[in-house]
Length: 185
Picture 1 (tube, rainbow, N blue to C red):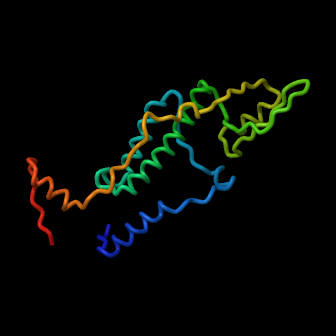
Picture 2: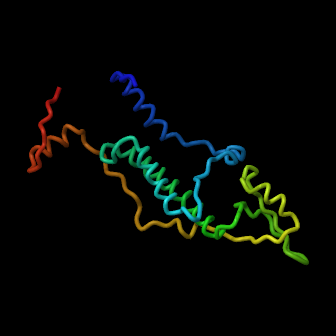
Picture 3: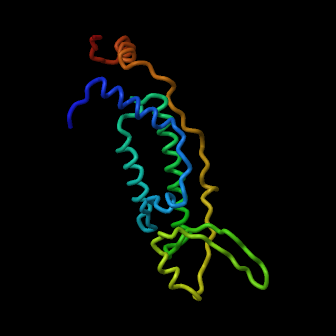
């Protein structure tokens, strides 16, 4: 990988910082249908969650202490969204009890002589063929709601605006910690 010039690095850093500040457009139904899901399974759930968390740590790019406050806020937001998605999928797996299942949205309920429901599923769900083959068979509906598990003990906080690394090094140098002096250019 070729080294970047200082100007290229500055432009790339500005581009990355500004990219996270724009509010993304709402996804279309087609885009939602194509969303990649986290691969979780009931018998490997603990390991799957571990791998999910490790992947996030590996892709951070730089240590927390080296991030600006805005970058930390971006990471907090991304971690919250990832945690919500992960909890939702875990609840779905646990609720299905290891049985084949599809997750859909209850659209309509009609009560007359019997209860009739309309449930919309993702057309790319891997169980779609089994659903079609299950016509006239007995099925079970399990109601799942991850909302009750989305609380937090306390909000995640970013470290307030950090000084420059040189200023921080000078403060450490004056303390009892052993710090190698840095020459200012």
